[in-house]
Length: 154
Image 1 (cartoon, rainbow, N blue to C red):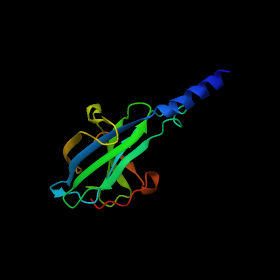
Image 2: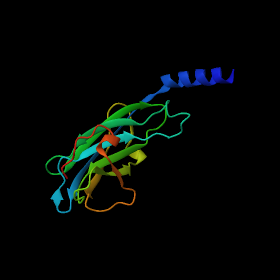
Image 3: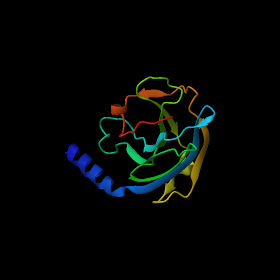
Image 4: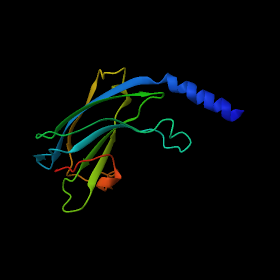
């Protein structure tokens, strides 16, 4: 009986999703040079509890590459029951020598830049990010371990 009640509640909540959007702009450098062709992604990071992960999985909101000047701009939208938890992910090999895979940086984005609706009304400017630095929360990925990434050149 309780299981049936939970299933009914979950199925009714599926119809309560709301559109939410966010936009981000910035510039990537590798030391003193622009970091061109670096993979950038906007991801909605959701709670990683096994019980509810199937209800609210992580979503890729937008993805792209930095241009020849290292500039990137992304805008993404998703429909979520709860508030989105936007994260900017950057995949690169700046200052990496001949190691395989890519360095992965993640930056949480402030809630005040989330817009209700299909179009972001505000854009967060993350400024210039120097990929040459070592970041404490940085991880490393093998190309087959992550989203469909094309190899970056910076």
